[in-house]
Image 1 (tube, rainbow over the protein chains, first blue to last red):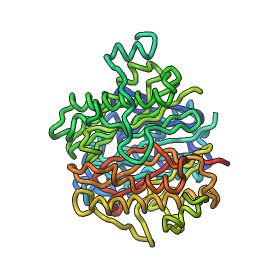
Image 2: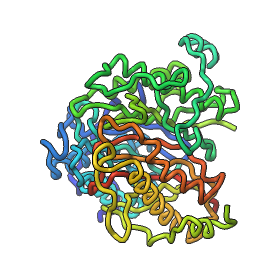
Image 3: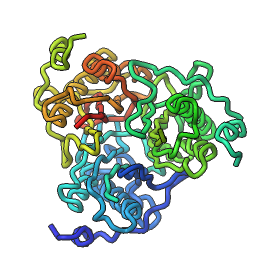
Amino acid sequence: MPNTIEDRLSAEGITLPDAPAPAANYVPFVKTGNLVVISGQLPMADGAVKYLGLLGDNVDVEEGVAAARLCAINLLAQLKTACGGDLSKVTRVVRLGGFVAATPDFGKHPAVVNGASDLMAAIFGDAGAHARAAVGVASLPFGASVEVEGMFEIKE
Amino acid sequence: MPNTIEDRLSAEGITLPDAPAPAANYVPFVKTGNLVVISGQLPMADGAVKYLGLLGDNVDVEEGVAAARLCAINLLAQLKTACGGDLSKVTRVVRLGGFVAATPDFGKHPAVVNGASDLMAAIFGDAGAHARAAVGVASLPFGASVEVEGMFEIKE
Amino acid sequence: MPNTIEDRLSAEGITLPDAPAPAANYVPFVKTGNLVVISGQLPMADGAVKYLGLLGDNVDVEEGVAAARLCAINLLAQLKTACGGDLSKVTRVVRLGGFVAATPDFGKHPAVVNGASDLMAAIFGDAGAHARAAVGVASLPFGASVEVEGMFEIKE
């Protein structure tokens, strides 16, 4: 694993985007104590929501994984802002909440949300190991197929 | 913005109800450290759940906004109890979790949950800016169209 | 109520299983400060997911209650590991998140999630009183009918 978080992002081929603006009247993250709570992120890139639709219908697991990874990239962009630009302040990924827009007969939500979980492990190593809930919802904002929220522990 | 939280509630035309009793074997809120975690609130008024149904089906966005606002009023009622009657102890709205009962093709969850978010901003000002997840679920207790849970930071 | 937590587990006829392994690339729990955040648990027993399907369709409320109770048993198994084997370190059940795979017309989510809430009350007494969200989702991992995640407060 590359030594620094910035090097690991490069190794994943990731340039963090500008942190996406929230879709409504709230803020991207709140700090309370040494916790950072980040709003649900959609699979947005270049200002548009990607991977629209439902798992089990028009979105396959591979696309769902890519969508979850994109949500996680946006979480990292928000987190970097929360850390004043220095992701090495992150001491633990505490929890990811993964919402997968899915049909009633879909069952591979864990594989989909791994798109986010795997990236956290790749970027933060042991500190990237997190608790998680992965569930299948009826629909998501703007027709997105995946939404991921997060809670992180940081040092001052 | 009026000076006190009680004045802002009045300006919004809100008289906080008695905090609704939980629908089952749990409590309306738990304090841990300086956090208050409040159970999912339904759009209840006068002891009945209002705005029954699904967004994208029989409930339109305007009604969904009203339902979310009613959930938020009930959150505030619980929060006031958690603060011993003094909402000025609230230092931050940390997170709202907005669950919108919706059809698979519905996409305006952010607009619906704004009914709750806008009220927090109106009542708490800068301290009302919160992280948020808004998702579309298959169904909610008693046929409610919206449920909102919350996490708040308070001072002792 | 029996005096010790282990006695109360016995009185409920529960032998805690080995803590189930997560279904994907994450960990069963994370400790941050004096909080333990536990990943969403499925109704697994003997290595298999039980009570497959949807409330409102092929799974009735009684079966849903049993599924939620089984999720809670798995939460307790993870929590015991998080506490180094000593559940008397638990000072409060802070929050349960109950996800019920359900049809759009189902409304008895609170009764289902009580399968988990009632067990927490039976095992922890006053410290078992928790905040809760109970919602109906479109589908859950591996076709499970219920998933429950939890946040707990412990002493060092």
